[in-house]
Amino acid sequence: MSFFVGLVVGIVVGLALIVVFVRSENARSKLRTDLAATVAAFARMTVEDSRHLLAPEYYPSWVVFSQRQKLNWLNSHLTKIWPYVNEAASELIKSSVEPTLEQYRPIILSSLKFSKFTLGTVAPQFTGVSILESDSSGITMELEMNWDGNPNIVLDVKTRLGVSLPVQVKDIGFTGVFRLIFRPLVEELPCFGAVCYSLRQKKKFDFKLKVIGGDITSIPGLSGALEDTIHNAIEDSITWPVRKIVPILPGDYSDLELKPSGTLEVKLVQAKGLTNKDFIGKSDPYAELYIRPLRDRTKTSKIISNDLNPIWNEHYEFVVEDASTQHLYVKIYDDEGLQASELLGCAQVQLSELEPGKVKDVWLKLVKDLDVQRDTKYRGEVHLELLYCPYGMENSFTNPFAKKVEMTTLERVLKSSGNGIADAAQTEREVSQKKREVIVRGVLSVTVISAEDLPVVDLMGKADPFVVLTEYIGRCILTLTRVILEGEYRECFPLDGAKSGRLNLSLKWVPQPIYRDSQ
Image (cartoon, rainbow, N blue to C red; front, top):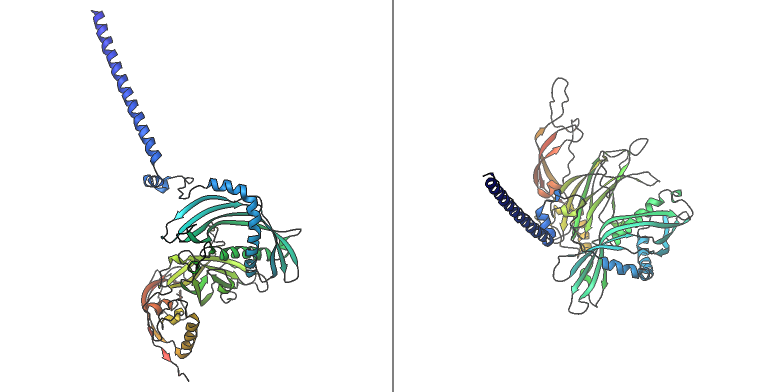
C-alpha cells in the first residue's frame, strides 16, 4: 500500500515540477522578447524622442543634446593641408587685420603693426556643423570651431614717447561659432552667387602678451590697452552682425551688406552704490556706452566728481543694425586724471528684449566682467531709459511740423518718426532749425496717490509723512521721457535713500509749444 502511495506522490511532484519548469521557460522567453523589442525601440529613438521621454532636469550635466553634426572627416583633411593653409592665409590675414588694428590703436601708441605673423603648426578643429532654417533665397550654415594654436605673432609697438617694443601674442585659445551664408541661389554652378562669413558667437578667446626681452608692465596701462584693442578689433570687424562678403559669381550683392535697421535712444539717468576706488575722497565716475566699440560710436558721459551716486540725466542715440543679436554695453569708470581710468563695473542689455516704440526703464546691476558669470559682489547699479525705433515704424506721436521726420526722444514729442536714413542730413538741419524756432513747454501734473511701507522716524510712534521739496524721508528720481511719450501713466516707485517705502504717483503731460519770432 505504501508503495502505491509513494508512486502517486512521486508522479504528482514530477508533474508539478514539469509545469513549473515550462512556465518558467515561457516567462523567460517573454522577458527576452520584450527586452529585444525595448532595445530595438531605443535604437530607433531620436533626440526629440529622448527630450519627450524625460524632462531636461532629470538628465545629468554631462548629457548634451546637440543639433550639430560631427566633422571628423573635415578635421582629418584640414590637418593634412594645414601647412599649405598656413602659408597662404598668414599673409592674407596680416594685410587685412593691420588696418583694423590701426583703427583701434590706443591713444598712447603712435604705431601698431605686425613684424611676424604665422598661424603655427596646430590646425583648428571643427566640432560641429548645423544648417539653419532660412528662406528659399539662400542657405545659412554654422560651424563651431576650437583652436588652441601655437602661432608666431609679434606686434611692433611704438609709444608716443619714442619707445619701441616687440610684443608677442602667445597661448591663444579660441572657441566660437562661425556663420556662413550662401546667397543668392542661382541656376549656375556653384549654385550660389556669394558667400558671407561672420563670427556668430565668441565663446572663449584667451591670449597672453609678452614683451620679448622685457616686461610689459614696465609701461603702465600698455597691456590693458593692447588687450582692449585686440578684443575690440575682433568684435567690430568680424563679429555678427558685421559680415564679410566674398563674391563667387559676377553680380550686385549690395543687399547682403550690413545696413542700419533702426535707432536706439538711451537716457543715462543715474547710478547708485558704486565702488569707491579712491583712498582720499570718493570716486569720480563717468560712463561709456556703445553697441559697437567704434570710437565715433562710443558715447562718454560727463564726470561727476566725488560721488558714488551720480546723476547724469544725459541722452544718446545709437544706430542699430540687428536688434535680434546686438547688445547695448555700459561701462562705469573712475576718472584718474592723467592716469588710466579704473573700471568700476559694466552691464549689458539685449536689444531683442526691447519692444519697438515703447520706453523701457531698467536698473542694471554692475559686474566686473561680462564674460564671468560667477561675480556675486555688489558693485552698484545703473539706471537707463531705452527706446528702440525701427526705421519705417509708424507711431501715434503728434507732429505739428513736417511729416515723417527722424529725431531724438524730445523731438518725437513734436514730430512723428522717420522712415530711414535716406534724408538724414536734411532731417538734422530741419530739426536744428525747428529747435531754434520752438520753445518746448507744457503742464506736468503729478498726483501723489499714496505711500507704502515707510520707515519709522519718530521716537514715540511711526511717522507723519508729507510730500515736500526739501527735507524728506526718501526720494524718487524720475525723468519726463515716458510721460512725454505716453501722455499719462500711473506707477509705484521705490523710495531711494530710505530703508523701505514705495510711492504711488500719477503723472500727466499736456504739451503747449510756443513759437519764437523767426526774426
